[in-house]
Image 1 (cartoon, one colour):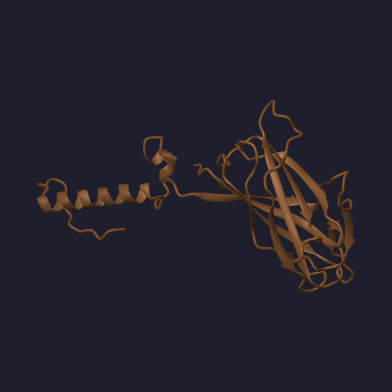
Image 2 (image 1 turned 90 degrees about the horizontal axis):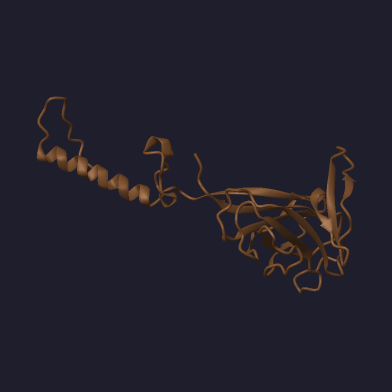
Length: 225
């Protein structure tokens, strides 16, 4: 923010030109910084309305757990399975994806109301494996469906993330893959996501099952009071 004068007056004093200039400078700074999104302000601190363009953007996330995923009937991954780790009896639920053929699972839910219409979604995959070595290629695609829209429609272009097994039964977190949803996505719409593993890709070299723990979806959302 621009520098400003500390000129002050007390009640009853005449406002000098120097003081007036200082006030104008502060006003200009506040307007400029608020418009740039650098000053978050509650609406009720102003006039109960404020342009969303003047508020800083923010992000929220949802987590698609393996428990909530449904393997596709055609080329689906294994159904959600419980796994107990031996030493501390830690219980996990995973969707297991084959190391030789492409397999899929789907999730369906409603986009949060605060989702900013038409924006992309970043998908981060959380996974592990019981054994093996090498890389795994995860992919995801999605479509938003409005009221009276056909449920059976093509999904958007898939986005992929490649990761390498570090240690069996460790948590592995991929880099984010940016997904553009098909349709005209807006808050409150039903959205379908399809996740897959692609062992036919040259970067997928792990021959054993990749166990998906879940997928974090991060999206831009409107800034509420």
